[in-house]
Amino acid sequence: MTNFVSTLCLILLCSATFLGSTTQTVAQESGLDGTYILDETASDNINEVIETAVERLDFVRRDIARGRLEKLNPAYREVAITSSPNEISVTVDNQPPLRTPAMGTPVAWAGPDGQKVYASMQLAGRRLAQTFMSADGRRVNDYTLSPDGRTLTMQVTETSPRLSQTITYKQVYRRVS
Image (cartoon, rainbow, N blue to C red; front, side):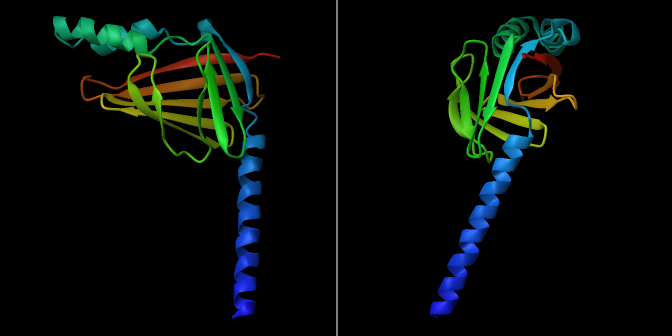
């Protein structure tokens, strides 16, 4: 029995060491850590995307939806990403950073409109998936780093039962040296 317990402890210790080093390697190899500035000319016009999304709504709901979508979809001028084996942090403009566990566990967070949402983030290679869930719908910010490491593209996808269609747009950022 003592050998069994010793062997089990050794296996658990090795597994924890292996999993810990794998997580750390993923965070370090992603290359996403850094600060990026918006490239407006390469990015989609968010206001045009919002207008297309609300054009099928009736007059009253159109104005309400437009105002809410504009508040929830600002064009972030600066994005800063930091990661460790246990945590991912994304800071946009001068807002407080969003910090979540690195393995994708959702945390409660206040969105740009002050409403409670659940946010999660996961790194996979040169990609960061940031997901926001609320009573109104779901938003995914899918950040992808270019092969040369100089360009970060954020592909946004928003779905809501209150909208007649999915909203999608991209924002392109250049790495600050």
